[in-house]
Image (cartoon, rainbow, N blue to C red):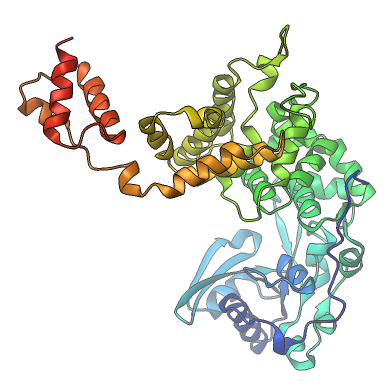
Amino acid sequence: MKSNRCIINAGMPSTPIPFSSFPASPAFRAAAHIVAHLRAHGYEAYFAGGCVRDMLLGHPPKDYDVTTRARPDVVLALFPRTYAVGAHFGVVLVADEIDGQPITTEVATFRSDGAYLDGRRPSEVAFADRPEDDVLRRDFTINGMLLDPEKWQQTGSLDDAVLDFVDGRADLSAGIVRAIGHAERRFTEDKLRMLRAVRFAARFGYELEPETFAALRQLAPGIAQVSRERVRDELTRMLTEGHARHAFELLDASGLLREVLPEIDRLHGVEQPPQYHPEGDVWVHTLLLLEKLAPGCPATLAWGALLHDVGKPATFERAPDRIRFSGHVEVGVKIAAEICRRLRFSNDETEQILALVENHMRFGDIQRMKPSTLKRFFRLPGFDEHLELHRIDCLSSHGDLTLYEFAQQQYHALPPEAVRPPLLVTGRDLIEAGYQPGPQFRQWLALAEDAQLEGRIHSREEGLALIREAAAL
């Protein structure tokens, strides 16, 4: 599938990585020990999947998976600390401790899969004796290679140590994401693979192989069968791995976007006032924000960027003077709340995402805010995320960073004790002064705190005097 954007071909390193120069992390050493122990007892074993792909690309993997001819009961017996989390499917977790760091490695028995009835797991598996049988059930060629770590150590050549039954190295070199075997079958087996295909293509700057892309488009409506948590996690990875724009362009082109996030699909073609948004419609504006998300950025910031203008389609109005979106923030918060509920975000994540949507327009008034209002604004949890959202919002529209620079300077100039000082007047103070608790308590306390934040009072007595004056009115 050809994109209208420039594709960056990550490709494989021009020369194989020698074993001696590879950083042997605790996770690598734990997995290598498992392979060696299985082989010492006569069982074939290899590294498998994404870790092999990443090593061929010159990226040290975060974790390592092992595949072996040993059946689950054998794996459980050979290692002292194991967890039979998926023994029915041939998967055992082996726990170890390397340099004081706990490491858990997934060890899976060679297998071929039966029918997938739930769009996620096979109804039954048949354990296999040959590694090539195991590889043929996997998702994409670039994830279907195996590595013999002992041979790599002996020869020093990573290429010589790789077992490649599906031409994964060729697709890595060509920059292609290709399903193993029949793409339609692979996507039907586990429908989440459709989102994974998009994520890998975006992450590595690869193209989706035409038959793989055609199957993805045909089967896109089936993504509804996948649990919302799994969809959420894949989308979050797309948003935070550093290639969010390309990922969402591929979601759009494949038809997956309207299936998983119809509210974002509705941003297409929603015009904006050109004097404020010369870049184009709301969809284009949102893509520009996604393009500016840094790799590894907080997930809440990424989702806030995606959803910040989600209320605009419902509030579009072509007024006599210009295009307007009156109330789009309030509507956007409601829509974002429904998305967070549907995708089952945690309460804390939802609160921050909604806060980003709710407050993204407040920067327009920041130079006119009273000191008390400004300090309360700075108290928002994760205010750095609000700042960053405003920065990329500006850069993705008019390009004027004046308000961002003012906010950043003020935010970093004020010490924490000035933003959130100990209260001069508390509810206990009001009770001790003879006031009866009631609805006005909150108003009086806010009045005293505003005066404190603005430097108009400096003691409890001055605060109580201000409240007595207000209460007498």
